[in-house]
Length: 355
Image (cartoon, rainbow, N blue to C red; front, side, top):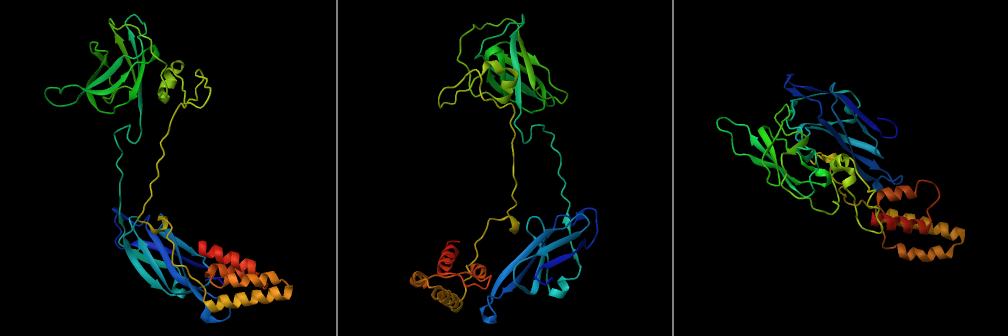
């Protein structure tokens, strides 16, 4: 322990029975104790405050915890070791001398958790399928035609009935898009406005292609005028940028130059609520200084106001009778030899109660 009360706990954590199926890496080591903060030379005015610190067991089994709270530490120091899900596997109480020495602790260890990779390429992501519809002479088909992509699942015996996987419609130029389905299929085909089935070639894993081309032999649909589509997918802007514009309102909008996002990303955060260190802040009971200490502080401030000839400050003393101060605020007020003014005490007491 250093002269300013800082403590460093270090050591190693080992398995009781070393087996490849168990490990100590990732265990959480927590240390907690009580400190005493003296407000003046009288011991009866001391305030006890909690202090704690934590660390993780590294790959070599070592850990290190720094406790840098204010005040003098008291025995015992409670040391606990927990699993990532909050299960306590070891608890010990140490003296200050024991905590200053390298610690060697044995625990049962954790069962290794293996994450199996997913065979689904779209897991956790939203992938797009884009395509185009043309006739056999290379002409473009009109916009607004319903497009349905069908798939036949794999199976033993007779193939099951086809089921729809992507339902969308054509855009300007015959383009279309939708959410890509990652199902493993035996075969697939597409229909456009009730046309005969147009076979689709699956990829090497038996899934729908990310880009599809549907060629119609003799389209029986007539061209019709449709309004400019809005709010396109990022994939639509890449393959068919001239067909889209965005009008989100709010004044004059240049429909020929939309504010386009070419690609989007999904961000995720995992919060483990079983770890005390990552839980939401919990306000503890407010530790106020004894009334005698507060009265001595007001008395010293009043004498300072009289010495400085500030009668206005004495009139403000009456407003401080019902206020209280916590230990941390009081410590900040008496850091130097100059007594705090009445205004400083009143402001600090108000902020202390609000906090």
